Length: 305
Ligand code: CDV
Image (cartoon, rainbow, N blue to C red; front, top):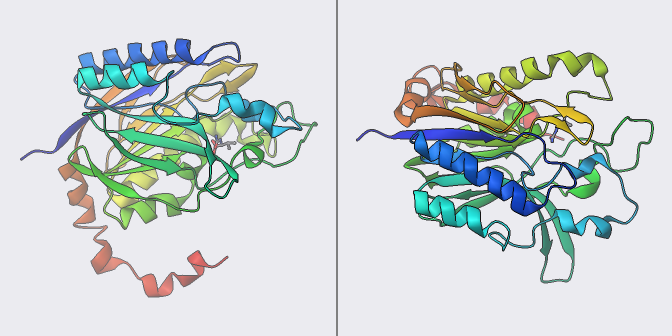
């Protein structure tokens, strides 16, 4: 039996502060329908897809930003997306901010992705592991990247789920730059990694990296795919959002590290690739046969603080 999953990346152009969730969900439904018309089984949306990238602003009272977070998934605003996906028998992966009330009365703010199967059932929700940026206001920057103020890092790490006939993992934006993200999923037999991102083209701590954003984006995902024998799907919210220009370049990489599809615009756009999950075995069963060739007894320092 073949295990071909047709995967679409549903890149979003900018979502401005004035854009409400209903208008964003409408755009996402158009992308979903376009992906379905191209035979997609699974559509991947960007990180924090439902709102503007609010960590670019610092506020003294974090509670004034609660409206950027979802309290449940699905909810009234996203139900039309869930309904249309189920109608089209297409799965999806959605990035958003989640505000959780814990039983002990504490509140938790997470940057998450939820994976939904073709029958509408929720497969799992992944919390971002590597939280970049800063936790206090840095007014000398042209814009903030205060993710470390707005989100806690995941206490769970990288999971892999049985879904879409294969082994599916998730990571979010900055996670894609770390080899450990891919390897931890690789050790769980991952065949398809889904990643949404918002990557401003300007990196204030070292602007010499600005012209390299596209290169680094392709470099890490291609290498992560090859070294772990897995497909990798990276999907951007790109373009000029509230005065901040962000990388588009949504891409799908094969287990060979080869680029299968790449967005051409900075706007709403669908990219599609047929992913034969059995291709992974050509790498995980040969060069990257982990059980045979890894030397974990020598890798201890990697996991030391
Ligand atoms: N949303 C992100 O995680 N962005 C980071 C930027 C700040 C470096 C990224 O790794 O693309």
